[in-house]
Amino acid sequence: MKQIKDLLPKISISHTHKQWKFQLMQQWSTIMGNLVSKVSIHKIYNNSIVLGVSDSSWMQELYMLSNLIKKKINATLDEPRIETIRFQYVAKKEKSKQQVLTSKQPEQSTRTLTHKEKKALEKISDPELSEALQRLLTKCHH
Image 1 (tube, one colour):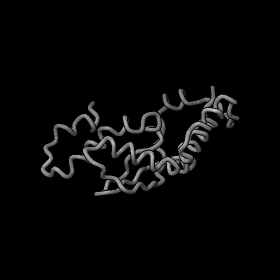
Image 2 (spheres, helix red, strand yellow):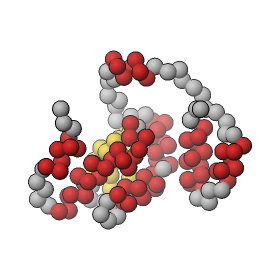
Image 3 (cartoon, helix red, strand yellow):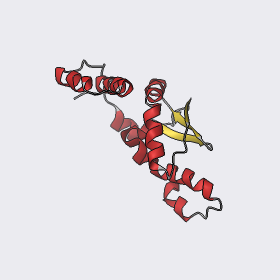
């Protein structure tokens, strides 16, 4: 079975202005990295994108990172095209039995940052990036 993203290059695209949308869809997993399981492309317009998020807490986190996501998207494209990112709640897909078995891990609460992590965050001059990283670190567990 082939994935849609693998078939996209084979599709004849009649309008050059639409090629960047296919490029964006192909590069999505690279752009989002580990967050690709939390957010998906819902709709692409001429200068904006609607991202689907299936968890309301992640929607807030991603909203706070929207400027960074926009920069990363535009850096991947042939020219900066995305001016606005919107997020939309989408219902979670039902998990397969295998996914349920492998994802059954106890919920862990947030942790406090170590002295070393706090010092590293103090060195970041961008307050938005610093705050986003702090939230991410408090959710990560060693």
